[in-house]
Image (tube, rainbow, N blue to C red; front, side):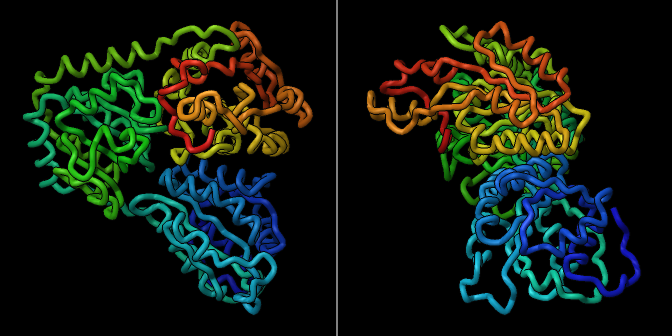
Length: 567
């Protein structure tokens, strides 16, 4: 991180912006180049060792890579795109960052100041366009204010509930020369629980008979995970991860009992309903976690509820909890760990039964034909190193991942709680760029993969040997499932004609192969890992196998949905 210096003399707005990124510790930037920010590219050319530039093939890929960076590091991911079409392409990553509570700063080129409000070429009012999907949207109309407003962007992105910020940059502001001091590095301010709130928490826990802990949200670190696990172990509490936050606690711990999300294990859903005290740490308790607000019913759940959340605006917004604690998950977990444990005898058997149900759910039923995704997940579960990073987008294939994969370290699961397709490929590439020593596996459906598959070119260009597993069932499977449930025999608009994904990969210079038999997958995985190149493994699965427990003909009239808006 660059320390503030004496006044540096005249600089272009583009140079001032790049210097602010360095001041605030940014070390990587994801972009698709545009003529609206040429002064920034000019300044970046002088600092490639300090601020690495990853040039992507689509702005959605760049924004999703920035989101993955934010998830992995806890620092704002930086994305730079051009005005109009570039900004709109990036909007899906912005929406994901907002729903996933990921710190991200999206810099967008803008038309010259003199052309504003005339609907000039590619002009958009970004305050109006992005107002609902960002924590703050601004436009910098004076280069002298760049240090002030970029500093505010970093502070805003990481404060309270983390999230995305958008800064529009008029082209002539970046070209204009000014003299201005750099801002000091940003600081993270974390809210803490009060001693009185901690005493009340213990008072609620002591008489409980069926308590459990729900963990989720962003801003988790290894220390947060360790402290939360220590609190749960000391009080023998069952811990449930929320949708796509399974890496917040060690799934191999005796305290972990499963994930509350789309396609929830019915036994776990029933335990959440039967709980008499739920301690929620870091999660908003949205519809995916609560099975459409049925596991916990607003505004006043049947269960006693402790809601710990870093953003005060969320507390009390949906649920009237018995105890509201405005605190960062890490600050809360450290304080809870220091509490004197209560007598957990009353719920020891209940917790153990929940753990046994979770372990039983890891056993999959063999499928009748095609590659068995349950067995694929078992291979990954048993053979990947504990620090391997696994990414995915959206679709029915993710149900196998949520059910059968296990995570033992925080920040090893990169997946969009927004349910956006196309996320897994760019997220995997960003993860390999940020942590090149780690094994990175990206999983995508055939429809999901082709929404961002062009980023294979980025992986090859920067020599990032990710392993991408493409689950090919030749259709938008989730939509087909819902059609069969609501309109049996009336499927329409869901069939896909796909390329040979292995040949597609080889055309980029990547390793590629097709797996049609389950037994061939382990060797294919080993060859992909040994290739030292980006790799695509295409798995040809039975289109009739919609989820681990549902085949196509069984979907008519009531298969449980994955809940994905797109698949």
